[in-house]
Image (cartoon, rainbow, N blue to C red):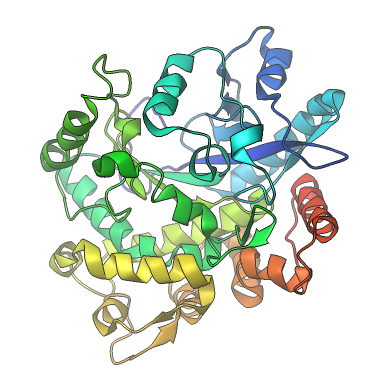
Length: 410
């Protein structure tokens, strides 16, 4: 997210949504994102910039990213814009017998045989990633996410926002998990994308850390303790410094000082923009309440170490809304003093009643809380019959949900 002036806390927002391009008949991945962008730009390019929503490439050639071209005042205003561009992209890729498909990962893609990396501008970056980490895996080429960018102005606002985001990260998969199936097989995680994401850079562990960022609350400390360590650790593998940039950081939320924002990266993309925006609006509502110290003070927020937050995160990655949270100090920090245990789904139901969510998105978020994460809705629709035919039926309907910007409610 970029802006002509530095925005303060919650004065703007940026959102990025990633989608797969698949064959309309087989639903296999279709690596034509470069041809899509060439169609509108006139040449092979990494980006298509215009008013409203911009398009860009990703590491995998079958993935396209749609994003707000700058900060917007509200999330709801972007819904029709995303929907219109999704329809336009579907029209263009139909020339290749393609269409867009939603959810955080392809359910049967084999990255070792089907993955193709972006071969055009900035390809040196992707080639370097591939040389160091071997990107032929689910954690690199089979994952689609929603990135939420929130601004800050100055060191104090950075610290306030970072502290709040650290508290919310562990429970995001409870509402955002959308990846229960990989390799055409039921996985032991409802948010399998996050399980792969958190381990894909294990060769240089300082890049992802523990997904939950360290308790660091000033830009200077962040640079010294995260960026410099990360750059130092990768230097033997990348002596030319190709990857020496803020985006190398792969924690669940990363500081983007180049645009005075923190980017939340832990959200699986959903079945349609309306769902992504509703979840993002709920996250923003909780963050505003935490920053305002509604339930606990800033010193309490800063005191949280990585391990207890990571434990909750791993539980929600595995079980989404059914994860049981029994950390009473954590519950107290979110306003549930005296509560011994609660499911993550019940916690979000409680939070939704406590915070302000954009009114155009409240009904959608209430439906998500009521019917559960997309992962569990997919599993209920599969009804235990995980066959290629049944998977095609479900994921074709998810593609229809994307085209129509509606929730998947089996």
